[in-house]
Length: 445
Image (cartoon, rainbow, N blue to C red; front, side):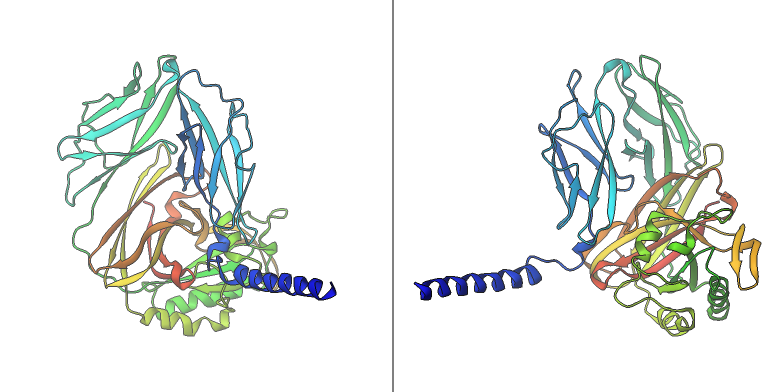
């Protein structure tokens, strides 16, 4: 009898060891521990429209649908969890906030909205086309934007759009009326009940022949306004930029961590993306050269910058990025189009990130000699238009000459100085721990 018990225990131990090995090696996927996206959101065969850039999910229901007790089926990233959970009934009379938590504890929040069709309240652009030259606009309903993409050298000053809107609704400017799309144009859709929705329509003209401009290294300076040694580190990095060539290096100040917390009169430059990139680090200043995050041992002190920056500049340029910005001063609407061209045959899992930077901001900064109340903050990262990790561009083998386009829109905050703002676009490879392969920077206006 004892022998049987021992055998059973041995078998259980063996199974435990086998399961432990399985958990460690399979199905674990390297890199997935930071993924935290809603992949699908379905209610009663109605599939939600997911906008990853704005972290929204929209459910479209027929008129008369009762939304007070809906049970969604939700699929999220591998190893991630979601709260409220999938299969739990919710009242969607008002938008519901869902939090996705990655395996590493980081989170992303999505706003889920149930849109019940009401003929009196319908105010959508259903289609937006230009006949000459032929172009069908891409409508982003969540962001209320329409993007038109034209071949190089297209004259966009007198385009005549054909617009279809919700039944019974009207639009101003009207369909069939010529418009100058040199800058974004606002269209107002008015429903039968008088309520309105405003769409921003942007025309993007593709760039012609791509001429490589050379490898550009992105240096992320993780800093804080209450970090006494950070000004010296920022000065060191900018001096290095002067020495090696401003056309080959861009220094982006990312405020993150405890010393970047806005206490008293110290400025608030914190961003969710910067906090995620900074990770669990506790010291300032730190630098990352051509990397998305301070992981895999790539956190550097400023005295260590010279070699990796020089090596980055010397690398073969694999992508060229051409940025086209359109900015409407009245609405402060910014539309960004990035054309990305592979310059070599290359293989990887490529993401593209579109960020916003503001230069020459005056504010409080602590220094070794006390508080400098008129410190000039350089190239402060203000946020990303498509998340900390950007969005997927291509996965697999690329051939030299392949083109990709990314189009994003945002409204500049009223406290941002548009004359000092820049768009930063970079391509990074997830198979290389997020290593950045190329960066391009362009003024907003």
